[in-house]
Image 1: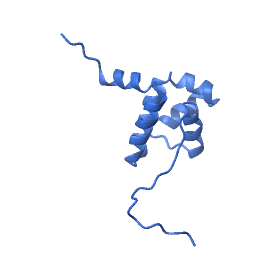
Image 2 (image 1 turned 30 degrees about the horizontal axis):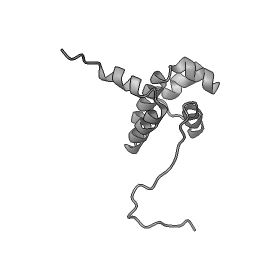
Image 3 (image 1 turned 60 degrees about the vertical axis):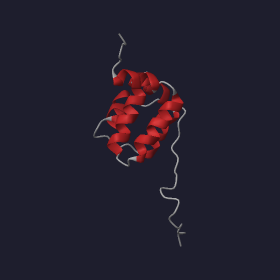
Image 4 (image 1 turned 90 degrees about the vertical axis):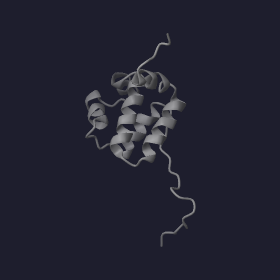
Length: 106
């Protein structure tokens, strides 16, 4: 009989790899909803050792990280950059639709 594992357990095991974590976060960010990105980031944090490990790497308080990553969190870009840097991931920007003409700011 084939053994099965819970999806969340598989996800956490997979997200321990920073390249997989980056791809997962990109997919979550494409949706455009902050709540989904934060949920994905919480999964990455769990996979990479948890809030305690992240707090040590980033020198941010555990309380601050819990608030930032909560379902009601509204993190600043700088905070996200610090968190992602701890995992070797950075924020980047890509065109949404390559077929749309580019407008220059005046």
